[in-house]
Image (cartoon, rainbow, N blue to C red):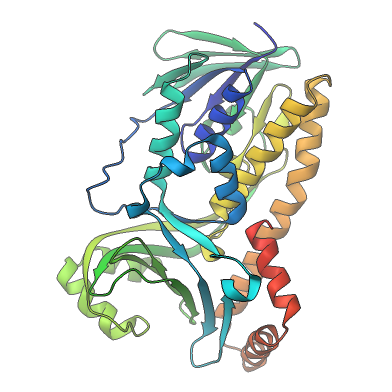
Length: 385
């Protein structure tokens, strides 16, 4: 086992990006993914899972060498972001006020994952283990060893767990977490509109939960509907034609005609690991922290973890691994916790119907809209600029 050998568990966007960036730096990578990796179909329908990639995230994908290879027909740069409480004034962020081309880019998760995997398959120092699961994990300060259900045993000096919110690695390490259920579900609805590509994404806050519009490439878009589990379950049971009629009557007003193509719901949960590492194992992305998707910061926080960890491993390779992982935890744990807390406060506050809280919310939106430089500074921070 050499010092350059690393095991990465989880081949989603965060795990695959970690693997590619480290492989490009000469590390020998063993990437383990329990599911079959779906190849993105450029001519197919848009996937339900989409993300708003910040400027910092797109720069990291450019650094990995895959951003320019993505088909432009599946990317949507948005220039405007609006948010408001129902029946109140809008808080608007515009890229022109920041002297930027756009605030971010909407893209399907599967598109990014597929591009990362295609790049990994071309690298001789990357070993891929697909539809494989870890049976045993031995972890100590001198290294890590895993045995797969395929009978393969792998030794390395570091294991990076990027296996999601229900991380098997985190469970095997018995790393405690703080967690709770938001007692809400979110319905993702893929639609095709009768308008050309739109450039504004928006979110309206209601007592039942937020409703959002995410523009996608061409005439495509995604609607995001938060509500009680009972309500979302009812909506999931509807046909696409029936769901359209409910959207027209109950969702914020849409200024275009559309057809529903796909739908799918998921529960909202929050988790945060007490420790980000243990001996020779480290957690990144949702394995370390899952966040309310309210502001679309999940994948961007995960990519910030990746950038921090990769930089430390590359730039400080003379340090002991324990010192590198300690620095990673110190750099990422507090910012992740602050973002989680901010989203929780905003989410819970947005649902309160107490007159005093409603007045405070409207005042905050009004003051933020007219705060000038402060508003632009907050937006730039969220974009990683």
